[in-house]
Length: 156
Length: 309
Image (cartoon, rainbow over all chains, first blue to last red; front, side):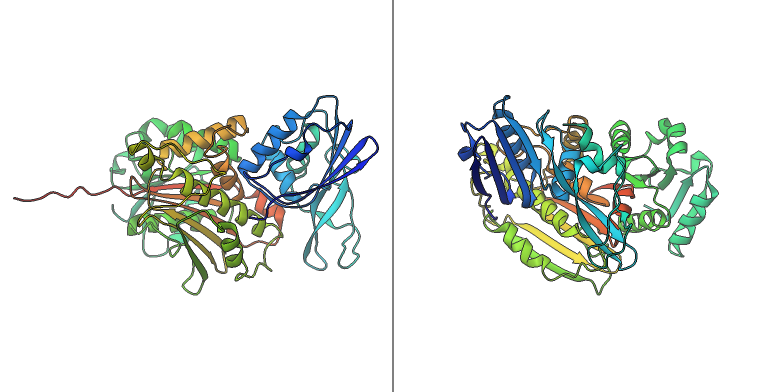
């Protein structure tokens, strides 16, 4: 199993955390405990897998973070979004999901793309318009069930 | 078990689709009088009819009743639990009939184990045998590399990795729990490596044909009874939370179920458990998510040997 790699960068009062690899039963977040920053930004872009024990470890770690600490999650891959929608408590209440990936499909080139979206682009759980990164086709189709896929936005 | 199948439905179309899928091998009757439903007869029923007649179905062996449901997963899980259903088939147009007939033929043949009944003879297959928890993910990833997913939406590889991880872990860590308890040992923490003893093995099979990709994880313990399975799924569907116990988070079967289009358990108490997950060939993630999941539980009963003196 590819062990979870945690890259930290402290920028004044903010801690930027890049998570790389798999989140599983062996994932330890010890190095992120007892930090003094008021804001933590988690970047999930390079997370490739998360299993059920990983979900539990992540939830436990999030619950232990000080309530006064502002939490931001960004670049959440589709697999993370699906887990959030399936399991409660994955993201801490009051936290901000800044950005994530969503599946779109281009009929013209017959390809699926993971389009990077900002949460602010999703209004009333409607997928924003997007262009195909392969052929440039404008107005490619959102390829999930909107009410289901965007349900996490109403939870945190 | 005979080849006569009783179909109870308010829809002629459902019967016609089943009849077409059945071909010559099976004999289907449309809404026959109830007294024909003998104890060894298989029954297919749409949900409305089933709920109207539910009390009658209690007279029959649970494994003989196939219910077709158009409801979403969480509602279907309540139905499975309420009526102890062993076969619930999602009412997905064009495919539900062949799916039911396929499973009925499997049941009649009494050859429930393995992926052979789910895949064409020219399917690509890879088999891994495991006796410890080392490198299980790496081995499975190597197997995945032998398959071509160009006709699929982007995520099946990720799902298959998660499903294999969960099912292999369940087999390695939870499968031998009864044996461990029998010798006074405790369950093993998921953070610790685990080694199976003697002839105990976990066999992982991945197969792909023109219809879809199938994953089978089979152990030699036979501890995933219907009651344990349904209790785990029920808790997860209702609570959607992780449990704090050392041999797992209580979510593995739930996640595996939700990533599958068809979720099938083959079980022989004390001998074997096999979990089969099938994802249909499909380029659109939306279609994958819209498909109503199907659930099947097949149980092989151990035959007691009698010694004639």
